[in-house]
Amino acid sequence: MGAWSLSRRTEPAIRSDIITLRGDIDLSNVHQLQGRLSELETNGRHLVLDLSGLTFFDLRGVRLLESVSEICRTQGVQFLLISPSMLVRRVLDTAGSRRSIPVLENLDAAARHLRDQASGTP
Image (cartoon, rainbow, N blue to C red; front, side, top):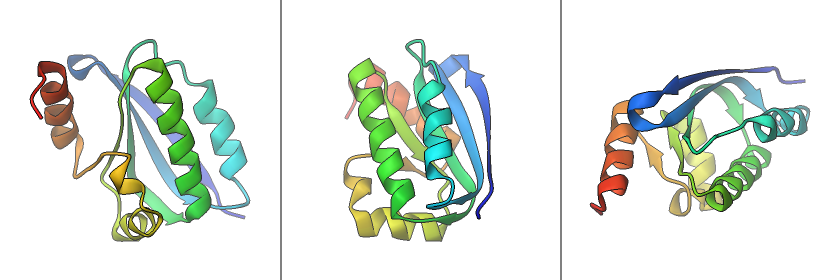
């Protein structure tokens, strides 16, 4: 059974909540994590998931991220992924999710992306 942890901090300069995930996301715990993520109130802030601490991630995790992305879209906030490991990138690429969910190298790149989006820069 995989274990995971979640931490949250707010970055007011980019109106975002940064959620850092650590550990394993798999069949044994994806529903538990989905419950935690669905409890988060964005209050109009964008949601940035830092995936640098994930040690295991499979298609169940991808489906979870796609679900969170859709929730954010209906709330009018952006959903970004940052710092994925090669394993996570490979799973996201295989699932085709990088076409619908922005994946950026780090928080600085996410901040630039959000500022560009706010100013209308492509």
